[in-house]
Image (tube, rainbow, N blue to C red):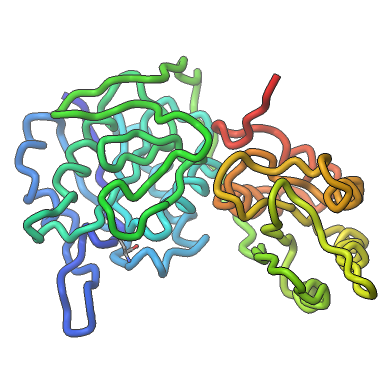
Length: 333
Ligand code: ASP
């Protein structure tokens, strides 16, 4: 039997109704007791790291989760992290940068319905998460939900209420879980050697969703408070140029003080390609302007937070940003 550590952080899976709505109140042991079948699957220790609605997750919490995995890495064969669904995809991305080349599975899961509601998905998701965490073929940061194993950097919450809340964006699921068994769609060699843990993040990253007619002055107003800007642009990616107000001048102001801008898209699938239109190509050629290509916004945000403490040199930022980590950046060959 494998040894798995359950790290509990809160979320609906740990919630009970209160007078002001659902709130995390159950501890890791309470949650485990609801799934007695786990006893015959693996040996489980528990650690209650925090008990929060994932709306309150922060880069500091991500660092605490990564540090917890690091501190216990040698003692366990795998890890399950229970987490609220709302920001689970951000945490999955952040952990994919903070814990690299792990040969052991580090599995995030949660539920759309409280573990005590009759039609809960919590028990199934929890069982599936342990099944994945003790599997010999799986490794790295994964998200398990509704019978699917999704790579951490590709996950996104795409449904607010249905049980199939998560999607793997522009990348196949790694595996399928059905009735206590795993079907592997993708098998990869496990990384050799020890994983690499990182201990710093810079949270000064801002995401700006472009709307038609937006005044570029907003870029100047963000300049002092943030060290990197992500612009969710339109289509394959471009920046507007109105008659008298040009976004490019505002973008250049960021580059002048060595702060990167990443252009991504509001369109849910297929990523950016700023070479297609003049409105994109003009911006793409500017120093300090990067594009997300196939990376999800969640991963872009987490990757910038991970890069910025390592370097403030724009060319080094660019090279780290375009170096794929855990399938975050997919390229056509
Ligand atoms: N608000 C909850 C959370 O993210 C939602 C959930 O867990 O499903 O913590």
